[in-house]
Image (cartoon, rainbow, N blue to C red; front, side):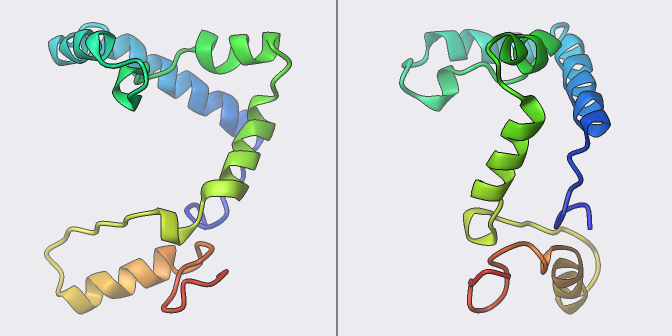
Amino acid sequence: AFFVAPLFTEGATEREVNAINSEHLKNLQSDGFRVNQVVSSRSNPAHPNSHFGTGTIKTLLETPKARGIDLRGALLKHFQTFYRAPLMTLCIIGSEPPATLQAYATKFFGGVAGAGPSGGQG
């Protein structure tokens, strides 16, 4: 159910923002993250690589709120607009036989909108 119909509750949204912020703070000490930030800062501003790669409480919660943007509402709108199987790529890696991995894919992701042989609204 998590991949097919996430709840997006207020509490879950706030917990996720806190987790992202914690990851960002951890990344500040990473040489690889710093190198990536230098590369991003030197990239063409029109290219997606030039955008900041992680978020903070300020960028994900405080700034949008100050601009009158409801984060949860924006997440729901994004989910409803873009969370479609034809826009996704799924990769499952395991030691199980391919038929078992296929069964896992169907079991856990078959309910995503647009999944299935027809690509229609699932």
